[in-house]
Image 1 (tube, helix red, strand yellow):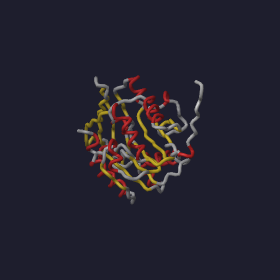
Image 2 (cartoon, one colour):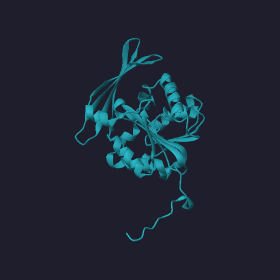
Image 3 (cartoon, rainbow, N blue to C red):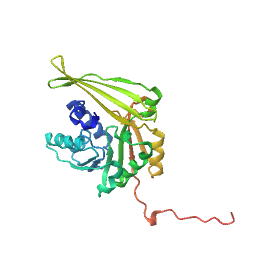
Image 4 (cartoon, rainbow, N blue to C red):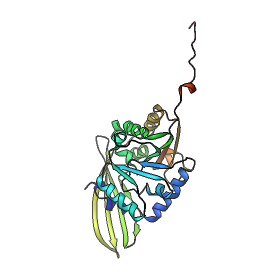
Length: 267
């Protein structure tokens, strides 16, 4: 079963402790920016957008998956928060979203679902709905390190829940076409007995960090920051398995502000 068609299983992997830690991280990461309205264009179940709502921002979420959006509404309602939600593909973002935001996000490693020939288009669509001077942000697994190591098994610590715990592991298949299939094995346990065993999958398309920098610079971005997801003090790509890119969109230059052309004669 496709992982994102079962949002309830997806949210088993996130706890209140995780939400609070992410709230503190985002508060630190965006403290230097006057962010009042935020769009997460791969909002999923809203787990990564909720911290911005808690900060007092007006929040909007878009996603291609109706199941995830349904769970997103429930997650916000549980916290007495109200988001604006829209079903749309990141590749058609500007067609469905007519306004611009102080910050446009793609959270949860979602940018990796774009195929290689779609990555720049996805960034360009985020840029179209971002105000000049606004912040473009996404987080991603470090695909450069992943392809270097080609690790197949990822075993995670049990996640404690109210009624028991969730045991969780991933098995990765490196496909001939360059994609990666991530298989999720989730075991729910109550009173030391396994009560549920489920298997899911999703597909990623690895990309190089240098390509992201190249695309953003070609789009006019020069204020680009790299740091580890959860720890802004780590800025070495070789030392993080999951990173964040945060880039400030240049302010528009009026005709009077543009540098005058210089004509050189005799050359």
